[in-house]
Length: 111
Image 1: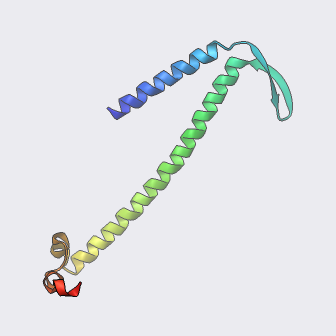
Image 2 (image 1 turned 90 degrees about the vertical axis):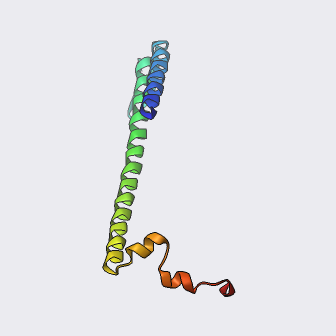
């Protein structure tokens, strides 16, 4: 359902941009770094939207790659700690919330 919502929103945005671009077809003067020229406003609008989408996607992909790297690092650490627990025969105590020795030794007087 979440993917369908994003698709519907994307289609609505594309339709709005297309209507806005088609309504502005007159040529405009554009000053580039090394000169100037006259291009239709519709092309300028579509180019600006395209570049905005590309830049947004690039920034989003960088974030995704960083998160995937963090997840991979934490999974490796989790595997290492699970192996350490198994080597020391502590996996059952860890599931119960601690070793029986430490649980029985705690009393209200220590606090």
